[in-house]
Length: 224
Image 1 (tube, rainbow, N blue to C red):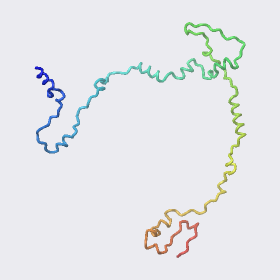
Image 2: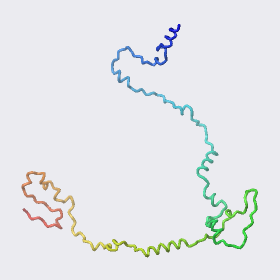
Image 3: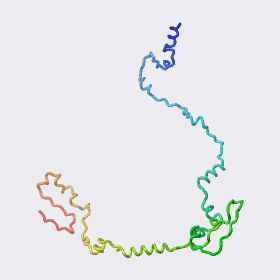
Image 4: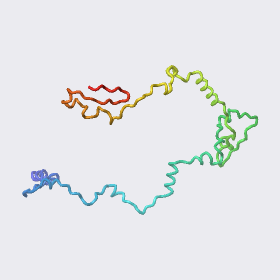
């Protein structure tokens, strides 16, 4: 009884792993059976992916306008007109800093306005930052002093280098101008096939007259 159970347990043909063995055909292979075996057959249907099966298109769905507006507002932020001119105050009134207002030339014997607690804003009002001083900013003359310093440095340092001062730029009339132009390439005598004596063995030992390239500037060679 035990032996029969072991035989059934170790029977390889009953195991699922042996069921994937390739079955060979006992038929005769004729023709281009190897090429026909390697041919790729394209399927007519489109294979479905996991994303296509799980997320089906909703053509009747319309995007939420409120959600898109909130996302656009968060990504772009508030415009400058809402940050600086929401009270109708021009930008020129923001040129005076709070430090300049408190520690600058804002000396006055008048006491500041007493502030009171506002239960709606949960703050002491009026706040100085909410009501800036509407005067031109304090100009300490730093820009004028910087320009004067730059001009003084430029006056002390020469603008010309030693090389430029030693070798000034001469006018074009001081240079030698070419009087004669060379002959064009098409009229050059060295391009004629008869003058290529190095390639023609018959003309190597014979004299050959050549026309100079620049007939006006160079003297003509005497005839041989």
